[in-house]
Length: 213
Ligand code: GDP
Image (cartoon, rainbow, N blue to C red; front, side, top):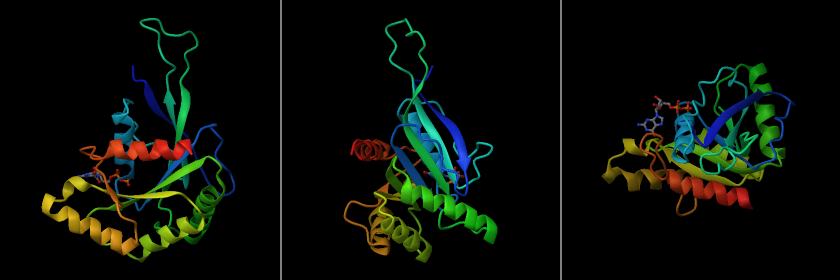
């Protein structure tokens, strides 16, 4: 049995705040198809967890989707501790389409209200992870999302997804394009792949560091 698992807690809209799990949370943002669920699944499986199937969960369509990363208390040899119920160790929040979604006016208001409330007010929020495609040139939507997160004071790392689709000779210029296009500091974006797991170790270190602050 896996030591870690990811449990969908719920999707939240409007003014309904997600319940507190009593642990820090990491929020994932980016346009749809950028590789958000693949990366999240890879992070969990690399940490020894079972396949999370984020994004395929029924009900996970609302703007703020909260998942609990559950860990089993340590087992002592062959003897499972009695009452060994898995406890939340970290919250993962999926904000599908924040700043990107093409939604009807009503839905957009409700979804964006929930996302903005979450990003601006959530005490548990330790880190935002903004995903951009490694092969794309940043556009005004990307810059607007980044500026909004900055204004809300969200601690942020930008990651470039699907790095396995780049040839070795293309990597440097693709990362420079994203860095310049978004005005990022040296060292960002961190290129990652939900397929090969490239740099998921580094991303875990950044996540855990942020959660300890
Ligand atoms: P989401 O909508 O942001 O959650 O994106 P998904 O994780 O569902 O991925 C969208 C598509 O891109 C799927 O067809 C994935 O198989 C593919 N994909 C996601 N991450 C990667 C990656 O790191 N490398 C490659 N080659 N394909 C990926």
